[in-house]
Length: 355
Image 1 (tube, rainbow, N blue to C red):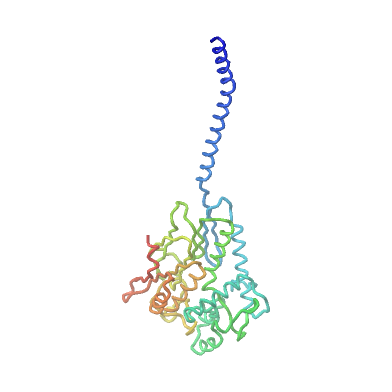
Image 2 (cartoon, rainbow, N blue to C red; image 1 turned 60 degrees about the horizontal axis):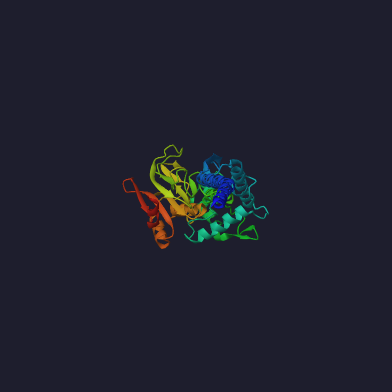
């Protein structure tokens, strides 16, 4: 009995000697695991602040909001400068200016992408969109060269060498049927520049952003409050100074491009008649339609920009017909009613953005 009690006592002492440190180490390890888990979860839930880059480019303002701790404005502006060096007709050394002067050169990737997509879009609305419209736009005073007010003989003469089918791209070089032909990407380049900045942000791995250059927009992911991006469509008041910013409606968007074309900002009056900057390349004259503004939502901003301009050229009836034949297009038109009031037409696809 005595030996039994003595052995039991020794076992208890051994247990205390060895087990207590083990328990202590286990407790410390468990505490470490809990703290590490809390830290990992906190890091995962921690939101990166949104940054904003803004400035002036292509004769308009830009504002880019993106979720990233880094200041990307220098890189964004460098990319826009490269874009300007390719497609700005106001830059004498740009690729498009040199093409218009018939210089021998191999064009860059910005130019080639813009040219090829423009050709594709030109075939769809039967010539309502045309990058060879430059001589006509110049003649009416809306291009990169200021012309005198043209008469019908001048328009007929200019139409002889305009038309998208009269130019082509071979091995990076522009081939013209007539050397007097000139190109203008003004109806698509701003939208394309938005895509270019969006692609830059994509390459940086940024998931949430809004790129806005002169009202042409690409949005991705969510905004700073975790909601869809809310983009307004302005009421089309005649306002060449862009003072009035009344909103017609608001769209809730993500992962799309949006562009608006209108005749309420760039126009002039002559002999009591309004002449707006949208030129019909098929007739050579500024359009005189009831559509005041055309907004298109598409997968990319370049396409949205080109189609928005095309619909301004077509007019309400032709644009409605085109949209019904192409139900994948999301469009919103504001047009003038019989008494001058604003009226709207929008495709079924636009309804999903009115939330």
